[in-house]
Amino acid sequence: MITTKSLCLMTLGIAVVLGSRLSAQVPTEVPEAIPGARPVAVERIKIHGTALVGNLEGNSVDRDVLVFLPPSYTKENSRRYPVVYGLHGYSIGAEQWTHEIHVPQTIESAFAQGAHELIVVLPDSKTVHNGSMYSSSVTTGDFERFVVQDVVTYIDAHYRTIPNRMSRGLVGHSMGGYGAARIGMKHPELFGSLYLMSACCLSAREPGDASAELERVVEGMKTPSESANLPFFSRAQLATAAAWSPDPKNPPLYLDLPTKGGVPQPQILAKWAANAPLAFMDQYIGNLRQYRAIAMDVGDQDTLRVDMGKLHNALDKYGIANSFEVYQGTHTSAVADRFQNHVMRFFSGSLCFQSHCG
Image (cartoon, rainbow, N blue to C red; front, side):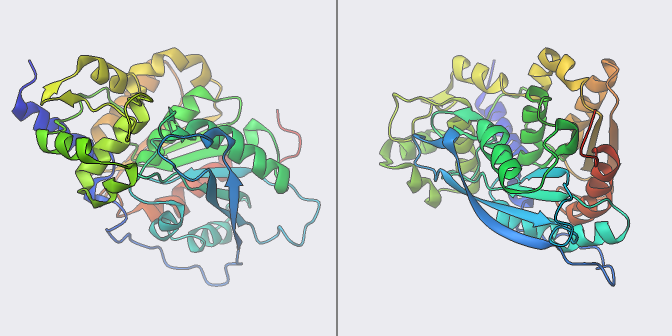
């Protein structure tokens, strides 16, 4: 039986796994810049999200995307490059994540330290409730398809990429790590290597008590944008519901909360559980076996280390090669160092840098 006390604990858990207050507000430890590192070019572009057209929240379908081009890109006009797609976490957008992982400096330093040159792409998936969960929802828009179809297609059409799955990598942190797990399991035809950084929301957990107060607030809201005045935790609940329990017949938010009148709703809880990678990964083992390399990391002071360990063990059980490191740090403290000295190095060694990839 689910008690009020247990629901409150589950609520706290959801807030933590969505990024919580450990997110962009906490400074990260930035590696020293490498003297003489050659600069990368930064392009801020808009990509039209065909997959987002008609979303019920009114989220913009023309999304900001940051593209980091390697030092040789403008001079070696016939050279093509692999691409790493990076997914940001909850409560921040792509631009804010650049400050967290401290790009372009960490990209430049990685190249200066010997990483092979590649293109890095950061699409923005922030929504009216602060996060898309990189999921497919009529309420938020189909952000899963936005990444795998709209963004990848645009980048291949407008930049000198190597348009081959073995030359594409996918990485994400926190909610972005969840997105990388979700998208990676479903779309091995597009990506050849995966890196999950402190991925949230891996377990099929019982989401917390939306509380009678939140229910009353939601009942009084006239537009989704009014959630901007709600506390962090409440917005996280709404973001999750919009992504995993959308309801096109329930305006103005077009979502169903996991409780009604304070009573848990089993059918909604089931929908949320169905979106947990640890619950659905068994259906995608064949897909996971297609990856050339899979890596994961998490801080030893991050509560997400437990579920990350479970995912690592599950992959091991199926004999799927993967590396897993628990490093010294919190949810965000070392993310810039990890991006420069681990993520970039990983893709430098796992992606195909030739025009013809097997």
